Length: 108
Image (cartoon, rainbow, N blue to C red; front, side, top):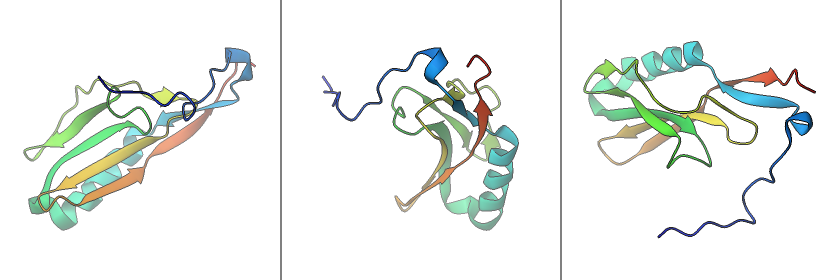
């Protein structure tokens, strides 16, 4: 069983305390993926998109075996976890890039 460090987790905020959300920017993500793939396609095993800090339960493979997966299943926004792209290379190297927009919380 995995232990959780409750002191490093963000404090729960009520909806009225949240000023903005980090939201996945799908267009920017696809542009970044295409640029990286155009330079190094043969060495990349897969690309994941997810929320940093919640990666184990909130990420999905968006590119693998030379094709994009348009049916990803992960939560697209958070008030504390930043959406990121993760490129995994055959050498074991990783490239991790942030890819999000800030969306105001209009419930305030």
